[in-house]
Amino acid sequence: MKSRKFLSDYHEVMVRKLVACTILFVHFLVNIN
Image 1 (tube, rainbow, N blue to C red):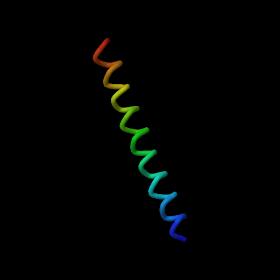
Image 2: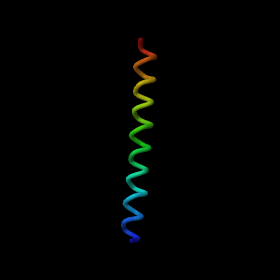
Image 3: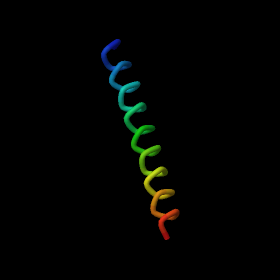
Image 4: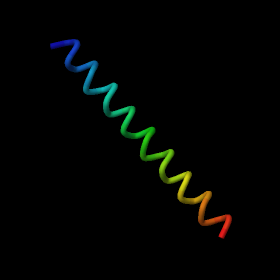
């Protein structure tokens, strides 16, 4: 159960990082144009 909690927390962190990188990438593209 403890490992499952760890995996869900890890997954949540990865998703947040992915979303943050996507937003930064979009802003980067918008700033170029």
